[in-house]
Length: 456
Image (cartoon, rainbow, N blue to C red; front, side, top):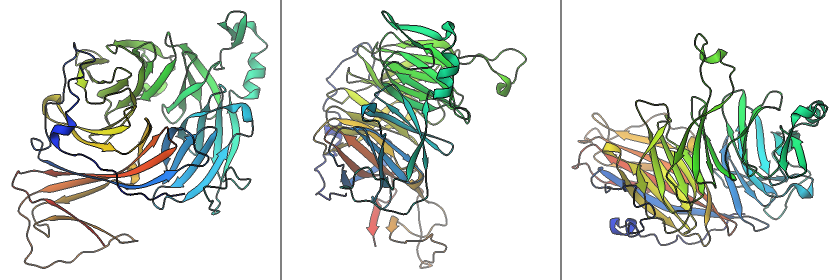
């Protein structure tokens, strides 16, 4: 159910964005925010669109978007919304009441995977069903999502239970199969078209083959609970833990084998140590060359690949949040950070690895736990030589693709401009999802004319 409220007041002045820079949580790490929007020739427009209040109310633990559907995990329920209309399309959960909280949602081929407090990973399939729900309906027998499996599978557990070598000690006088997690599964991530990984508060990283739903590798990765995982395009895995460390995992490539032929197991490549408290969130830029990490120490650290090595070295910190960093996402060349201080900050990378805090999105009443962007609805508007207007304008109102444009032949454009429009969803502990529209207009010249926004 959509709850439309007035837009929260947002202070966008440059001074307000840097008012918390005195919080030197990691004094040995230099600050990277040295730029302002003006020095980057940027104009930033952002606004609150709408909000979704989940029923029953509960912490929003995780948000994910796939095929124009927003998946919102709260408690043991998963609510599914259409990202355009914000209509509630489905609500589903596990029949077992002991499954506990849903911790993570990811997508692999045509399957949806969810991780849970009860140490299990569930597999779902989306059925075609045009039935729409009210937010008050709750889990429905007509759910469009059908559970088709649980990891590890019963067959896999039975086959491996015969041999003692398949058991590991998890606590004193307690043994479990190595394919099983023995604490909450805190995160999931796709590695490639064949593999997926899971992390857990049991300190283990596990690799799964999604075609057979079998666990193929289990690694004791950290000394404390693992809170975050992100995977680069080359298959490198980054894990962040309450032990304050980030670890980098990869497959060595044996001499003489091609990348597709490599069947070696994951090994530890590097350990990144700079945070002074638990690491809660990780994000990578699009090419995997820059890693962002957020922790309870209120800092976002920026790590970049060194030319001489295949792992990351810290280059500096992004400061401004007054409480723990809980979530991070990278969209195009923008970084979004959500914090226990109830705000979302937007960061832009500039020249020489320096950053600018473009805006602060303020309006949540509780900590911001999860962020996701609707990538499919990102629009790129460009203007240049031969374009049709002196001013860049966003014309919004068509319900079908725009096939043709015609303009006054006297219109001209003298500068080159481009704008990105991004829809961002932020979920918080008060059980509310806020939807924001963020537009960044880039001017190739300081003489460019300002952005004009028009709604039809």
